[in-house]
Length: 71
Image 1 (cartoon, one colour):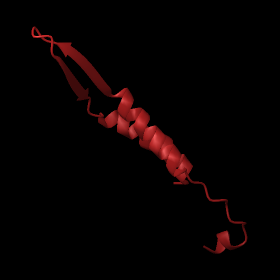
Image 2: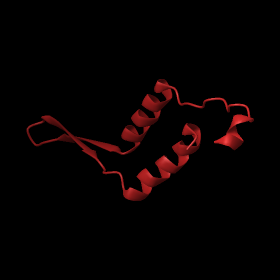
Image 3: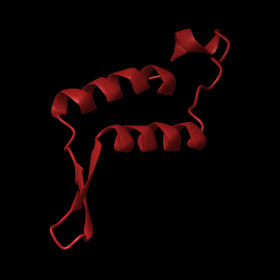
């Protein structure tokens, strides 16, 4: 702590809430598959399937975000 007393404080770095929301929405959209089906009675159905995020993907996102949080 004594060595930090003489150095100027580093500026705070943060991520705006809008950026967090847009990144989250983009990840959800990119991982979501939508199928439209037409059955023999000419009725439409929609099937929405979201792939689960793998551990590697989550780890990569966390590694990319940590520098912005100053960790």
